[in-house]
Image (cartoon, rainbow, N blue to C red; front, side, top):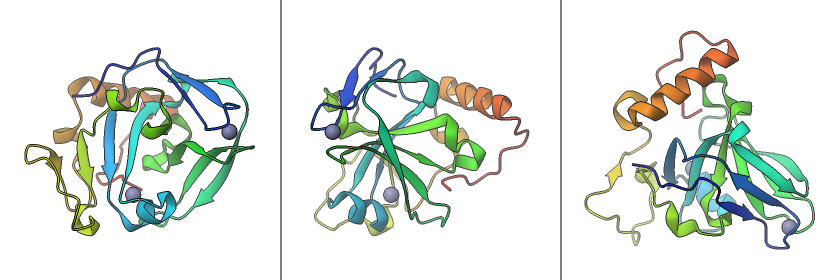
Length: 174
Ligand SMILES: [Zn+2]
Ligand SMILES: [Zn+2]
């Protein structure tokens, strides 16, 4: 389901921040929530979820800024200190905040390698955005067990184990 982007790089606009992705994403979200619309100034945000330790910062430093999300838990957005372009963010994710980076797909050198696996928060999707008829989409959020690939669920389980979290709660877009 997810694109093969091992070894792909990305970065900010001024070139100070460069990063390298060491594995395929867990999943790629296209989020149509009103927060993503406002914060991106666009109609939606496309995020590739990847284990934080599989995203290597090659050059530069990021500044993390806390922004609101529908859950109320907030996300920290990592921006280049110079040009302020956002390269990734971290959501609560049931306690995995530090362990999963939401790479902003548009910051990759080859963003076309990662089309969305699922459209979320389509209840607030802009009317002119017409989704491909075969794309998976949900009004708000999905169930992990029926949406993530078996391999990605295994990787998620490893993250929970590493974090010392035994029983992940059901709904975790927070
Ligand atoms: Zn920059
Ligand atoms: Zn969103």
